[in-house]
Image (cartoon, rainbow, N blue to C red; front, side):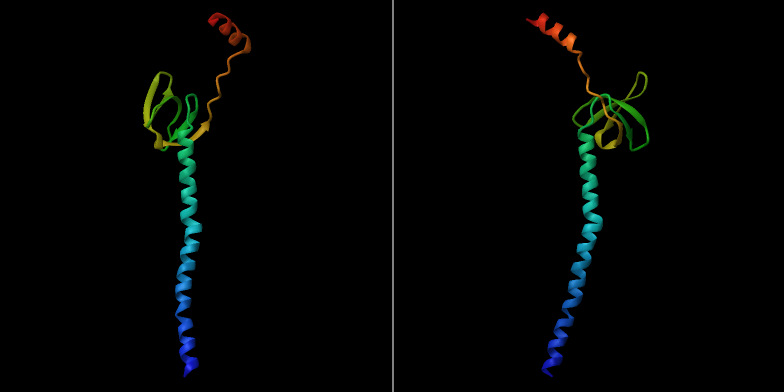
Amino acid sequence: MFLAASSGGAGSFMPILMIVLLFGVMYFMMIRPQQKRRREAEQMQNTIGPGAEVVTIGGLYGTVVSVENETVTLEVAPGVHTRYARPAIARVVTKAEPVAVPVEKAADEADVKD
């Protein structure tokens, strides 16, 4: 009788362990990758600068003209500017290239300032 009671108690521990294991697998397969994608999207939206070519969530291609706190102004055609919320930018097609000042011109400007 003592053996029957002890074996029954161990059986009730197994379903609880399976539920905990199921939640652990669900976390690593679904929740964690989604958090990673959200962080990457936020980082991309925060690093957008003028001159970058982007695609909106609606599929509209445009070039970033200016960036404000929560909005991005895109040039979708020559002379046509539209404003979008930062989260509406789905991806960056080409990054803006930094504007390089020629060395000779920079030296001439330095002489004028002095």
